[in-house]
Amino acid sequence: MPSTSTPPFYHRLSHTLLALGLIMAAFYLGQDIIVPFAMAGLLAVLLRPLETWLIQHRVPKVLAISLVLLMAIVVLAGLTILISMQLAHFTDDWPKLKRNLNDFYGDARRWIRREYNVSYSQQDRYLKQAQAQTMDTLQGTGTLGIITGPLGTLLLLPIYIFLLLYYRAMLIQFIIRSFTDEHAERVREVLGEIRSVIQSYVVGLVTETACVAVLNSVGLLILGVQYAVLLGVIAAIMNLIPYIGGLVATALAVAVTFVNHPEVSTLVGVVAVFLVVQFIDNNVLVPVIIGSKVRINALVSIAGVLLGGALAGVSGMFLSIPIIAILKVIFDRVEGLEHWGILLGDQTTEDDINKMLRLRRRKKKIP
Image (cartoon, rainbow, N blue to C red; front, side, top):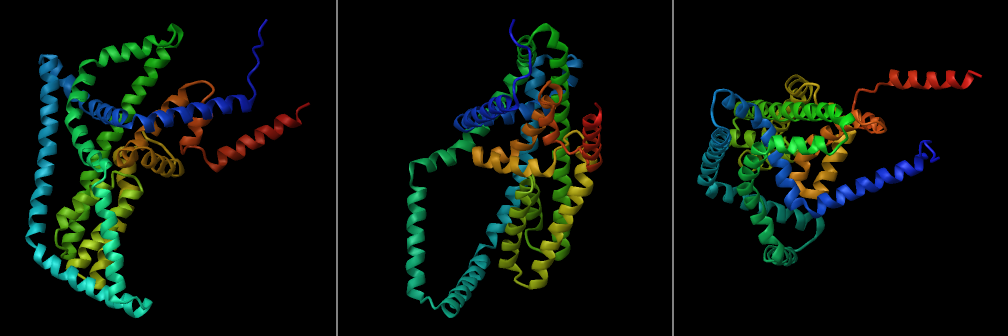
């Protein structure tokens, strides 16, 4: 009779690590296909309620999906036009920016010569070498893929979203039939919770981004910073990349502000605005708007963002949090993987740990 004892820990751990390694390798090698599908999946879940509402009002399925996609494209086009208008104002002041940059460049050269004893000719030589290396990189064969890759993804996204919405029932049925009948109800429960988590996360993320854009723009307008709306919107969009995006947005805003308003008080004010908005975002907007659907601890979030960036760049950073949230839902529902769900979540407190330790000590004392 075969043994029914639980495999040893090192046996289960090696299988888990092997599975994670294979998944990450597949994600890295197939990111050009997986990332657009993942993006389309998030947007399809976001648009699903509106499609359902149209179908309930007797709109044919194909027409309902088409109308939903058209509305989404119109909203994105409006946002793009808004940013383009701000960029147009930015380019109108290009001569002034160029003059300020030249002044800053001259001051920097004089400071380097004075502090580090590097002559102007040596600085020019270093700059020429850097320019040559940059041109070689831009002329490389991979540059065309870097530029055309996002464009191709944008063109394919509406097609992917349409097909995912159209074949949604078939895909769900395939997933359920992939498991035995005794697990069918559990699979439906997991799929329903995953849908709820994704909808809550994406809708909350859009609302949170709009609020952050308004707060950033209002703060910069109060300081009298040029291109306040443009910087506020760009910072809010970059804030979609957890933790890292906010730092990059702050650095970008300070750099642009320095060109037009080099006063120390204005630069400190810009940093203060972004810090205050980040505090409000982390302590008010995220808990209230996004809610408790996505309960992931900060350590795993940061590690996931960095790992997503290493595997698939900016798209991987953006997808890292919803992917971790989906994994947590699965881990919490699958027997034997509950401890991984605890690792990803933030519900465990010091009191819970102390209770677990006390229980183990009592069990050891019982003869």
